[in-house]
Image (cartoon, rainbow, N blue to C red; front, side, top):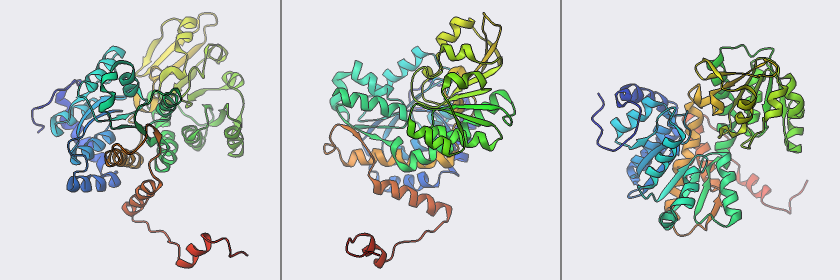
Length: 425
């Protein structure tokens, strides 16, 4: 039985804790790297006395990151990074079973979301774990008096890093921030394999449609787009890619996908997924061009990838036809456009997000990034930083060890050869 909570919190139902604990422990089986880090943290306590705010998707995987941070001695407060991504039973279990303050409710309003961000900042954190940079942005805009208290921040997603780099360019980022998303053991695996599988999982759970034979449009061919396109093709879909980057567009062509502008793709697509991190990549004119029954969703961080304001102007308020499935009827033509998960992250709105084995590496990066910030307090310059390559390699090595896989090492002769310019063919 879960104990009575001894911390402040705002969750949907604390009575859901027992189910949440079971699911957290199930996910932990698939997270051996984070478990090894947690065990070391428990011995060394590298985060003792550190106050930390984590703005993240409150899922079973995030719960295991929170456990690792707590084992390291950190006082952590968790808030949701997206109104539809919270798993309410997990939020309850973190409060009841681990005594971690959580402020997150699936379906929370924008006002509640913003209130939770401010509540978290009220704890005067030393370190911010962010997912989209909303906490950092709020700090800079509203809590200038707290900036000097911040040791640094970490950022989980591409969208958040784009915002941090904009802050850096504008000269307003006053502390070091680790671009966790850009670690190789994060974006190669989380973005490609995690987003690829979980996006399709969300679409299928929400709609129960067959993907085989459908024209599936992937808007954006970054690491997330690559994963979605690959998995959609594996399910038998005819995949079309739209891009603005010539290099990524050529790569998509060489990977065997059709590439065309969104103006053309909007007329032929059956299913659309946006994964760009940008604004209004599917806009009003694209909705107007879509066939009857087209399904549209987003797997980028913010719902702004879809211009739903323009769609409402064309169609009025939607009808909810299934959980997380809203149907808009275009008034001028009678065509129906189906939007999944209110345009928010479909893999978390309608499914459970990335598999735990993928998040194992992503959250290993987060845990070690926090440790790195603490160890280098006052040394790192303000700005966006990469986690050192040796830490990235350590995470990959731990993953291989956990999987029982061995690899080769270079001999002394080989090391000498690749480090010398004198030896040729």
